[in-house]
Image 1: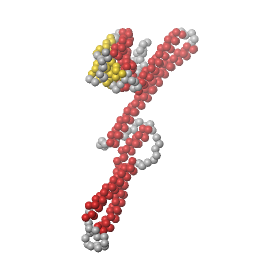
Image 2: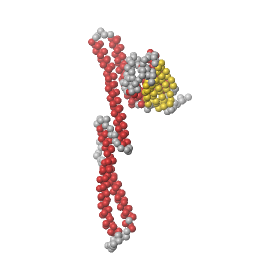
Image 3: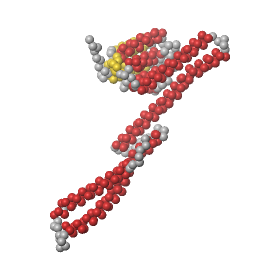
Image 4: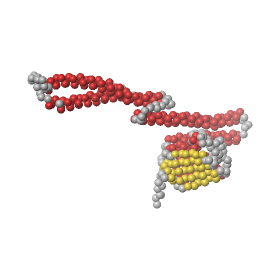
Length: 365
């Protein structure tokens, strides 16, 4: 945005300091004039005596007062310029840092020393903002690189299959069609997951009253066949837990958590427990599964895109794309909730989701 040139903040402060000093001095002289000279006798007829009179004071005091005011004005301008420069020095550092950020440098930090004041609070807030921006940009770069790699894989496989079929016309066509269908399905699932992740990050939805216990039952019913094939016991416990948000996104959140608990429940034959409850002003969803032990330093990275706690499990149904917990984290943040992942001592993972609770209104009769 282009603006017309104007006075700098330093010059404005200098003029303010000097003007205030000059005004204070003028008021002081006015007080002297009003309360001192009014009581001095007037002897303007030239009968000058030894005793002071108003005529003598006017001719000696006024020129000296004018010189004093001029000196005070110069002193105010010079002192104000120096003081304004010292006061605005932190702001200059912040401005220089903002210009560096505008030029693409996110690693620069102000780190202003000294006791807390308005400028240092602004500096700390600016540094904190840069930390978040740099972390977000790095995360987006990793996500873009991983997404490009994941999308490139099914496309490369499709091209390889087509090249083989073109060079070998006698190859079984049904097998080729089946493999191309599987690869294309995976590419579509990955694209839909990326779109859902983007939608969760934007948080663009119309909030409505949602019961997490009903969503847990629906997700468990949908994924029960998968759990039975893997000989996993799937239990849903707890009571109603009402919150406000998108029913579609929250259902995907619960489904992803339950699916992740089933798929990564290795070896087969374990348990998955889904529990919902209302806790104070929050609605809580817990998904706990058995399985292999997870290193504690690995757990915080599981919500990053394309991160997996165990080796990828390829099945014909519900094949993972590495975005399950990343989508869950995005949906939870969009609903102003918190997501906590903790490894179980005996193996497996405990996932706790806390969302703002809402009172349940009874249905109209």
